[in-house]
Image (cartoon, rainbow, N blue to C red; front, side, top):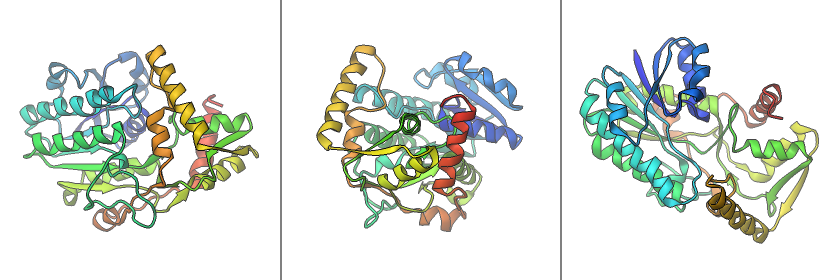
Length: 326
């Protein structure tokens, strides 16, 4: 079986590529910068090929004879809305156009979207697959548009959409920020940390994606993923404090966080690089919750997450230390 993977040098994509290699698959990994794919030479079956989802001619030659496509290429942070739309939506549309024209033998497209598509939800009313969606960030809007483009352009090819929440684990650089701050003895939280979150370890996300890729029951379906529990930011902070040796949890007022987002956006404009903290991320953090219900994927595909949050955070902390990140 031959698989095409976009986003294979990113956090989730790299973990997925390594898992597919161990499973014995031949995986074409579409990459823009071949230097970022050097590590693939250590994994049997991984074949980096030069390509960019924004350029159709660079995609088309690699689609023929593909059985399954995992589309993960995209950005979670950008300097502005246009950057989000260009990569997450326009790029996805170009890829799906190419698949529709050249990928008639493809058995499944697994498209990685986001809980951000749903908009904010709490434990009282968690996001469910049949709910109306209402994204409130540029990222969420761009991922929703990518879903719509998939449905529009690939009507004759089976597809599945996965909407993960916060994902953490080895190679992640977003949640890593909190591990890094904990190393210096502090973990900042907004207010009393009552923000509710669905969270999942990258290994469980990958298991859910692979499960969906080879299950006919997932054709034309959307699934939320999480570890099956609802966590608060304060709960996560206390776990991190315990794991990293007692870092002090510091409560930040919303005004300070808003100012930090504005400053970070200014730095991003000057440097040309999007920042981990920005006004869009602050907007997400100031809401009451990002929670999803995962009954559907459990009942239809038999998905069961294996990694409890504290265990996952601890193993991730050890990975960061062993990899020299901390």
